[in-house]
Amino acid sequence: MKKVALFVDIQNIYYTVRDRYQGFFNYQALWDELSAEYLIISANAYAIDSGNAKQQAFQQTLRNMGFNILLKPYIQRSDGSAKGDWDVGIAIDMMDAAATAEVDMLVLLSGDGDFDLLLKRIKSNSGLDTLVYGVPQLTATSLIEAAASFRGIGKDLLMPR
Image 1 (cartoon, rainbow, N blue to C red):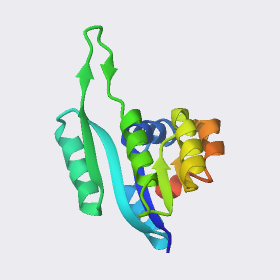
Image 2 (cartoon, rainbow, N blue to C red; image 1 turned 180 degrees about the vertical axis):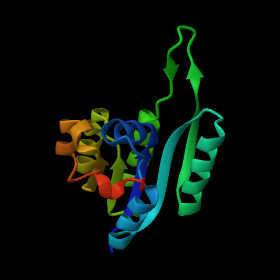
Image 3 (cartoon, rainbow, N blue to C red; image 1 turned 60 degrees about the horizontal axis):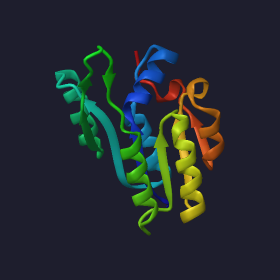
Image 4 (cartoon, rainbow, N blue to C red; image 1 turned 135 degrees about the vertical axis):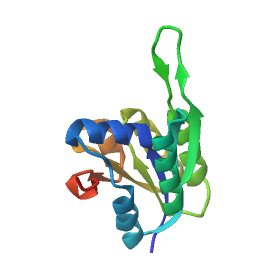
């Protein structure tokens, strides 16, 4: 069984699934699907900490599944815009995981095209394959092309209504 490290861009998955399907992503279904095929060595989920009780309960649910939750504070700018981005943190953690001999493949949940260069670099530096999950219509083509494999998030990975 291949050993994998899992990296979840929670904000990206939340908004793309909501926008495309008007629903919520089912992390347990993802965990079940991946653990049937692979041995999950580590699972990081990256989120913004707004102090919201529902969000904290969701994060605890993910911890109970086996995810390590990494939080950044929610930053409200003086112009009213907000900042909360984990791209650099995810990239560093994926590079670190690729540099170890612990895993055979990296799994990324995100549709963000900014990660395409990262996946190409991981492949060229370590030879590791990458698997990307994303909403097909909202995942950057460059990210899909940079991954060794792409799995579209469809209704089978949504919470039941």
